[in-house]
Length: 119
Image (cartoon, rainbow, N blue to C red; front, side):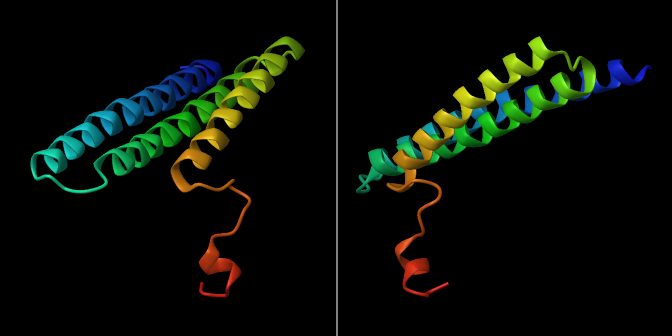
């Protein structure tokens, strides 16, 4: 197996892990939310959104890593690097948006505990 074939295989594996993280996270989040609804727990919707967002964030991070692996290691042309930059930009925007939805603050903002010297 040549180096490029190996890198392409690794990239596809990381892609598959990213998709699996999203799908399995969505299934697990849905199952937990259904159980909480059945038990009539409070805050089901909010916790469901948070857990679903976390699985999507993890999947996006893995998909970005796969794109970087394949683009930089396999075919580093100006066109492929430009496409990679656009993909990373879009996925980074999505990640920031999801982080804001999950935590209520931007990733670079400190938590209230951190700002008060709690951690």
